[in-house]
Length: 493
Image 1: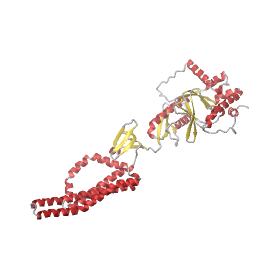
Image 2: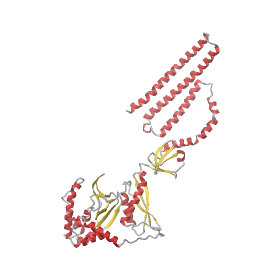
Image 3: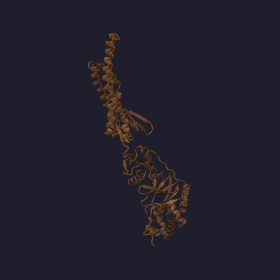
Image 4: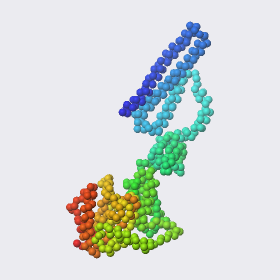
């Protein structure tokens, strides 16, 4: 198919070359016949000697000019033919690059000028072309000064095309002039689409003098996000929590582990920085904002405070008693509605409600991760979540839960690893119940374990149809829920 296209492009040029060569072959004969005819006109006394002389002089200049025109046409056609053949064979892989186009144009112009000098001198040896061009030196100087910027852009463009410091699609920052995505690179200048969706055009002569920062599109480029905390919180725990939260943010590469470190011991608290690697650097502004949002939600539910300036008076009004009572009553109602807690007494439910923790998660944030160990369960109090199960690179959404639904009960009761990931669909609030809260209740009345185990077995049977669609569960060789529960909480049989 490519050879057919090449032949279709070459055929008109080849036919033109054959035609011009045939004309050049005939011109000397036509010239001789014409001059003989003009000489015969005077011999036959058809007209005056002066007219015949003028006609003969005109013919003597006309045919050399025609030869020069046809010879130049032949040279141009041959150069174009060779260019097409070379680009289609030797330089096929780079035929569309700007540097090849510039080189082809420059070489072609040099060949045309040289050919013109040779052909012209061969037909008019008495005409001094050097004197003609020397007389136009002043004009050349004027033209050169007028084209100074254009020539500067041209040669700077040649240098850029030869070095390839950046390509279309890369994010570059040209000093303080512009930052954005490269849309095109030509011999005149570069076009940059800024992150405000504006188009900035910078000439190559300017780019050649500036410091350029390049973030290649096919590279993992690092970013830094800053935050701070008060001195009263553990640095190691803060670093671990932030690192795990940032790792699950979209556009953060999973090939390199995010780095969370203390940047400075500030006047008001610890100054931190998060170093992460972008999969698509063109979206780094959105990713930075999402990381800051994720850190805020993380600090909110882990009760980690940002550092405030020392000269700022930060007054917190205590929650009124009525609001606390309403929150406690609401938590009691939510926990009492969970089926596995039906065997508990009012006092036990109040104890769970008093020690339960309310947490808030951002949209898209992972609440629990598949395969991780856990010792708590969650009740959705506001918003919605989705349950995802991963089979290698594929993810399957098993279900969606809303306010009043719960998950993670097997990790709370038996210490099993999380069988699936749970991700917040929108801003979601959950109530978390940990093992240390439930343990005193079960140790006080071990018979509760049997009743809770029966409810959990029943719930397992209801959910087995959904789980069997994505992974097999073997019933043989596994401990019963009751036995796992007793072992996890250290209850006597």
